[in-house]
Image 1 (cartoon, rainbow, N blue to C red):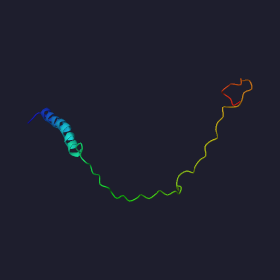
Image 2 (tube, rainbow, N blue to C red):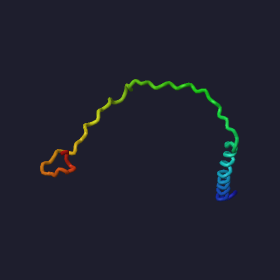
Image 3 (tube, helix red, strand yellow):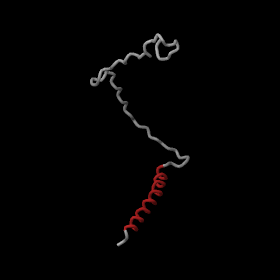
Image 4 (cartoon, rainbow, N blue to C red):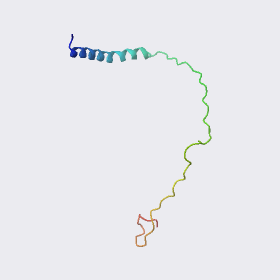
Length: 87
């Protein structure tokens, strides 16, 4: 009976070798060579129907935005260039 460490080491070694060899093998089989002509066949695609323009029947109704907020009421004792009020 072999030691578990030896078995784990052999399995890890096989996985490492497969991790380096297999991607290169698959890339070599699937990639065309430089200068090769790649032919992509045309397909017959049926046109997709346009979506309906009718509004959805479920969901909340649209809400108008809130009115714009002002900087506050004008203070009489402030200077003219006070950025905290409207006037």
